[in-house]
Image 1: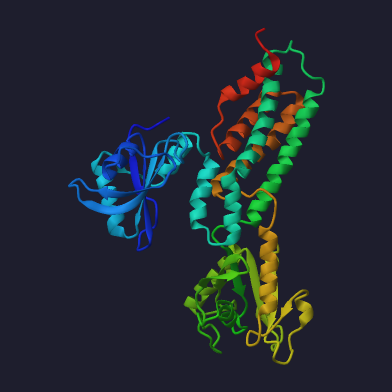
Image 2 (image 1 turned 120 degrees about the vertical axis):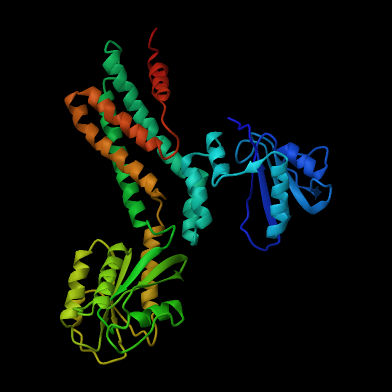
Length: 446
């Protein structure tokens, strides 16, 4: 499906650099490149050094031209890349000259859209391309590279294949009851349903655990006033980001910064001290602190080793119980001072002093982050993908009852809906696929 119009865009970030790439895709891409370079031809996939001229026959730049002949290109169309000297001016001039010769400025994401429409990539790979550009950690890049290679596509295709198998046999049973079907067909379908259900549940679970992998896991530091939250933030960042004071309530709002722990980028949120406050502004800060806990992947709860465990500490401990589904690290700070805190209240905890070293906490954080990222489980990278799998799982679960009671029309409906939803991750499902399985497997109409 080749587009009649030709599009152009600058493929590198704006700014000063050694190289800038202007990409042209469409039926006129080669003709435009030949006119601008005054060359008789370009050899596909061969970098050609050439002068580039404007409409007044003035030399604009000396650039490398690379021609990708359809269908062996990213978009599946003819593509020419102008690899010119870096800088906003040069690349903009080349783009303007390309537009004068009949191209138009590409819309955001249009190169990837054309690649999808021409069957070069599916939707999962298109999303991976968009995410990998924004990736901020090594683990995110590794995950997205797997999707670019087709890991999610293979995952979806295996489920589609099983669902098509079920739907085809069910439709045959409904419409062609006289056909001889395998005696164990419903047992096969039941087994396939159970395997798909487990696979989808595991995928959703892994994806939720690794939700912060792309944009950075969120870590909230909580505790009552003056336990050392801001000091801990400053130590993690290795610079004085937060104001440190002995006055309770100094931090009245959440402070968010990013830092690298091992191979992971995390967003650290220093929260206002949680206590019974009467100041309106401080109350708002405390509300934000509780919200930060709700949104966090990991919670670091600080307690003061030098103080007796009081009502405010108990309030923090009570709050942590409400979020027991989260990863919680309890830290007994100020270990350089005399111990007055009842350690039995904390059960498992890390003891340290932000004035000395926080290495035990960093090691713990890295261990937890590794557990959430170093996994062979399939991981979904967008809300759209997660929603598609949730809907698929819902219909798989709803299909079990009508299959057992022999209500095959209802069973077929849920399997068809599951097929539509899982297919939304990569490419839309077409009914002809099921017909191909039916007629191919059973030789109907003989």
